[in-house]
Image 1: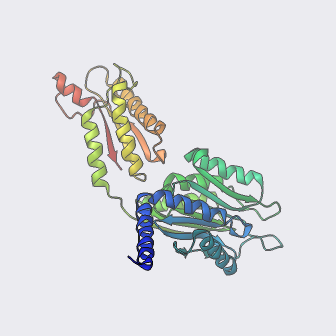
Image 2 (image 1 turned 30 degrees about the vertical axis):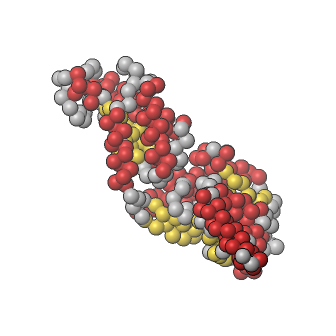
Image 3 (image 1 turned 135 degrees about the vertical axis):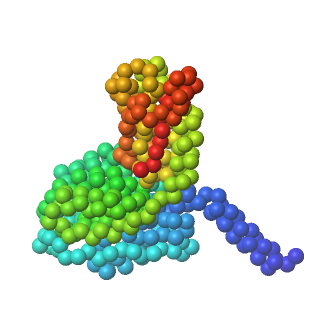
Length: 347
């Protein structure tokens, strides 16, 4: 075999190995690219830029003050990622808004990276504003899930309102939704991503208006119903397995924690679905006490799911129905056992 042929076969082997490694470590590569590009976008002019990767393709979203800044951000991202990983530029150019004499524009961006981290970036006027934004995000996701890229520039014009509540509301309703992004530039707010209903879309916009009455709202949220059938089917199976509690108590029996773990796994996989956790009892005992007990048991299950790291726990509601909705005959022991149940119902 000629040396040229050996060289060609060697190159082919390297390409095949590279492809296999890329396929096997897809998410690891995305995370590595995310870190590399983010590290290359630390200049103040890039504080409104959020890089994300889907496979080998990167996208820049967010807002920058000029087209020159957008071009520079794209060049910096491409330099960090390398020629094998294309970068798409979806950056918007900030509209003219309240600013300082040097033209600096107050801005805030909230989005998610490839690893589900909450990315906070932008230029804010003081530490108080920065801390309010951080606290709002931490209350929803915890400090360990935040990537803080906020820059404080004293003297810059403020937002004219407390943006902390808006960040908290957006993360409650828009958390982990596909393409979910919040941008505040001066007095303009843009909302992007997918939501489950027109009601949620209107609620997010209404919250933005209440938090920032003078703002111009660009509501680009898209209503897209999730694929609920499989999730509801999986949750129904858990209902049949019957979460058990200590007698006349809301303490979950250790043997039933496996069911809680399964439910948490489903709710992590379907991270945007609103679910009502229903508590039901049999007809034994006092009606009012049964209603209270069913509520306490539903709340105990919700707390157990939150403790297992279910994302966006505000989408979970707990409601007790007492003995009002039996599914079997309360005159038999087996019927009463079926009626003592916790159900997971999509809303």
